[in-house]
Image (cartoon, rainbow, N blue to C red; front, top):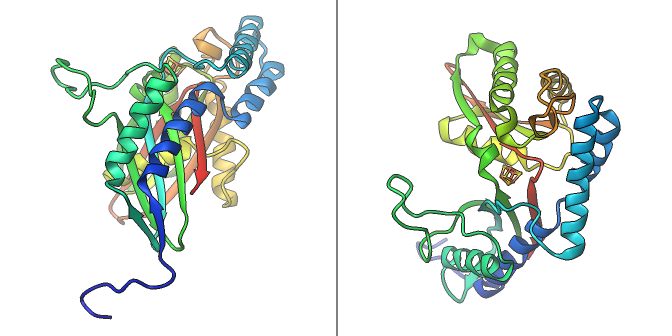
Length: 291
Ligand code: SF4
């Protein structure tokens, strides 16, 4: 291979205009229609909840999501910050402009078209301006084999995001330390995370890597359990533990504090044990498409 890349027949051209349009469409869709697995879990939770007030709250949440989908309106006043995940096939060649700018423009268009709240400030420290035309979302890109692109759009509410946490444990803390940190984080979040929550738990990697891992875990469908039996068991045990905290739906008391605990792991340094817990609220919104 020469120093200059050669174009091969397997390269697929993809227009950034299509990417922009799909980001806008999915942003609206994710804000109007709660994922079916989350809605199913909320419906199931109604019968699992022992507290009458908790049951009524869950019924109202389910009704809220049914009405939002039928009437085409946002599921929550907090339409969140757009978090965009792109799994890009390494044989894809983007044409027509900047990928980053296309994503940002898609977020702006979707926010306008869907009558969503402009929730992002471009001046986090002093709060003197909104993001406006700068950077209205967060983009994560993974390079994967092939010539397809998987686009996932998540609208992340900040009630739950604010209560998320990261801790650099040490190896001696072990599984017990991980479990205690997860339960502590959900307990400290209380009503602020808009329960029932989805607890995305990242274990391993590095300081920055474990936070992203936890976010990916929080966005994993609730119907998927971890493929490793020990981690699947830990997900179940942690769900049982957080559901004894008594926080309940919307923090009004009850059994159903969490719908799921999703764990993802990465190899890490022998001297460390990074753990992150990214909380998703009952309005966990995500939509995806293959381009
Ligand atoms: S945390 Fe979720 S449910 Fe609560 S206000 Fe924000 S988006 Fe809405």
